[in-house]
Image (tube, rainbow, N blue to C red; front, side, top):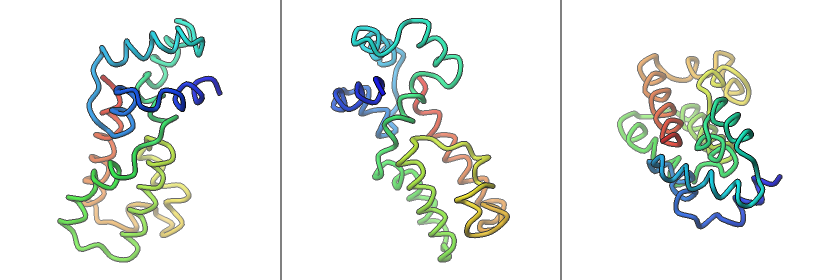
Length: 149
């Protein structure tokens, strides 16, 4: 709750905006955020070290802020432009954008679980070709990695 309140109060901070909009962040950005989290009593060094070892501070903050919808859609715009997507494929992409907007990141293993299996029991591989699946997973991994310095 403290972290969410911190995010809400500092939503205009440039480093948080970078994280939310899938822009590359630097170690300096993360160091500044870490200092602010300590100064505002959100966490201490030990808590931040645990976060860093589990998911990383950038990914943790992205999970709290979510990914900007425009950034999420933009990440897949070239993919959508290069492929003639069916209705199910468009629906899957909408689910993916919604998930990223809400959760900030997505582990590609979740593409084989609900809600992604609601369109096809096989999940992503039931909706897209193998090549398309690899492309989507690659885009998702890049989006996830941008949150790390």
